[in-house]
Picture 1 (cartoon, rainbow, N blue to C red):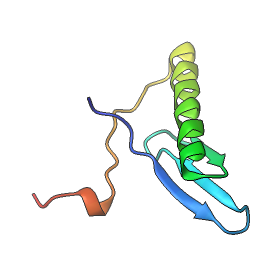
Picture 2: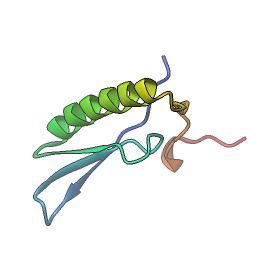
Picture 3: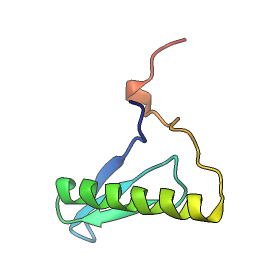
Picture 4: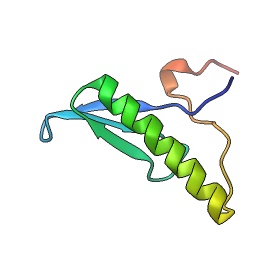
Length: 73
């Protein structure tokens, strides 16, 4: 099953982890640990998709792949 990529990174200033979903504009979350940030991002994704459906807005297909996972064409 294809799903959206989630980036997780640590922020020194906030002493916690941020998670964002590049394919879903402004869909991000915060947690004190990477696991918590991931859980929060999954909740944010669910809410983002529900809101888009309710508003009749287009839902992008998962496309983002970090360079380290891309293969040559």
